[in-house]
Image 1 (cartoon, rainbow, N blue to C red):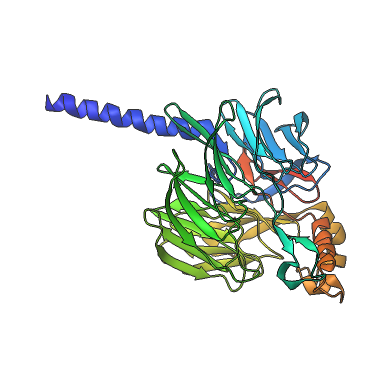
Image 2 (tube, helix red, strand yellow):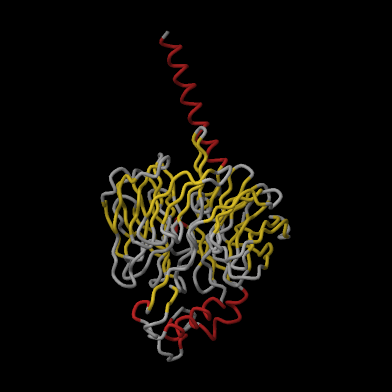
Length: 442
């Protein structure tokens, strides 16, 4: 009898383990799937191909079954052949796509600035359903941060992303979850797009949700990180970050590891919270740098990018102490991806890096966009991003002058897209409008 009981327990355990694995295999998104198979240190090799869109790319790619998918500011979601870089199909919306796609079974989900979140057939590119939010827009206010003219409405020039949908499956429950500029966090039926629940926050929500053990974690422009019950949307806890002018808001996606919820914010810190209670474990002082990048964790080390210190940080998971940093040439808003002992990420000047995780930040290689090669000398100061230098003595208290500087930076091919790895190839988008595919050294 005892032996039979043990066998039954093993079978039950195997069943649930396989169920969890199959659920993870069915769903794919750019922020929950950032650790890939790999061996050792694999630097960047040759350019495999690049695919041109007609707008800047802020969306992050995902790849499945030989097809890579990405959105563009030109309003299209593209399906591109992994081997050739040729377009398979494209789906048109009526707004810029700054949301990254998520795949579940034969459906791809994403949002657009036209105010809709879409479900599209992954094979045909045909619409299955669309869900209308209360409207999608960039963050903004009159006289943002005291800039002039004081009576003008100004969009936040660093509000780069829309919330990216994720899929939750549990038995008969099949939900798509995302935040919205209307201040709500939505859960809609994945099959028909019907609203199941919504949770109201106090500001636009452009962060992307993460699910762990039936909780959903997401932050937004009210500077609060929320933990909600994924089934019904009821609040479990909330954690408030700072609200000082210019340092308010959560744009990053959390990582969950070892019972900790980890994320950065415009409040210039990186936070570790207890996943059950929301209580602060520790916070890392980012030296007045925003952390918009979403963290990736491997071997008890957190890897995350910073803004004004131009760094990829390696932090100790338990203590938050800095192990090392790699200084780049500009803001690091791209979220890293890891394969083997290599972390990959881009910076705002159009450089893309492959860093050996075992080198304490010493061994890396990089590639540059063609636009960076062309415009760096006239845009950057000693090959480094410098806002004042690029402004050329223009008055930066005037909003339009800040916008002009950002447009010059974008001309370099800024990389805000987070990379995805498939078949020994790494994919990322750029503000120059290209989706890049680079071979990795074997």
